[in-house]
Length: 113
Image 1 (cartoon, helix red, strand yellow):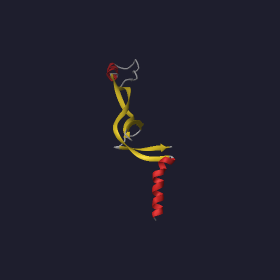
Image 2 (cartoon, one colour):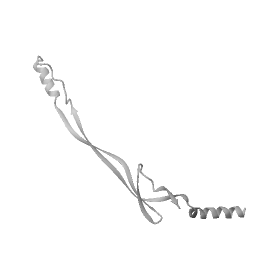
Image 3 (tube, one colour):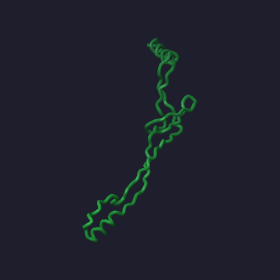
Image 4 (cartoon, rainbow, N blue to C red):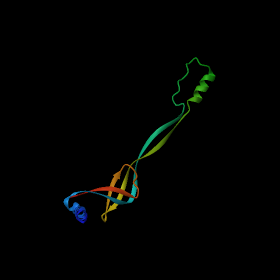
């Protein structure tokens, strides 16, 4: 039993020296969203009515004329495309881009040689 425990401890402490992958957590320091802005034109009202035939009476022409009043406005859509994450691990600060907002820590895979 003691021999197995000693072998396990030796393997655990020697593993990084042999090379491999370690899974650790880094502390998130700052998160900044990356935002893309898209501007689009919006039309309100009947902006492309069909003109009545020239034989239409005056009331129909007036009604058509009132329908043609159209307003246009610009709308800005903002979309978060990624998050720039500043994190701390092993006494140093690192940064990465992530698709989702992280929590207080992020999982890291560290490769040792």
